[in-house]
Length: 244
Image (cartoon, rainbow, N blue to C red; front, side, top):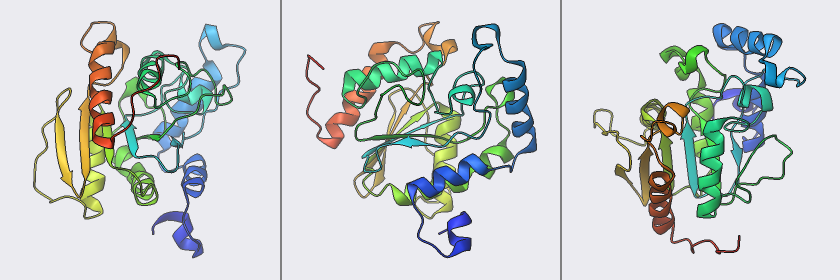
């Protein structure tokens, strides 16, 4: 065990990781940026109070699917307090998760909007919104402990979906750190690329659902649907009801 839970000599938990993430102040550049964005805001969110803190992972603690993204959006997760919630990337992702039966609703606008993840947990390799959506390598390393703790606690996970190359690289670095992967083996990134991680664990890769990818057609809804269908087959999940 690592982190605050280990220091206190108490059993770690998903809620404990989430609480430690919210309190984190390890990256001054990111903390300053998140607070600045929350103070200046943008016109469409002028009347909203921003979260402006590190954003924890969330979802089903018994999930068999772990989704790993890059970082919260400045006016998405940094505003709502829930990763992928309240921005265009999240709109694209949650619609796909709903079609695949991993989410109870197709849209997520706020933490209390009623959307729940089913058999799925979502996290990011960086927990604070970075300037230009580009966290520095050392900032991703500072967050690695949280992903490692989630990995240890989410004991039912059998499939991991990495959204983008940075997310996949950060995930693989964490797995190497915890002794789950060979130190020198290379894993190619590409949309719909699949890697067998052994012991019944499979890594799936997808382009990130950023506007840059979805608006240009680099990532289409059918593309992400196909990856999630492959995940569902691996997990032997029943297809979602047509009326859901």
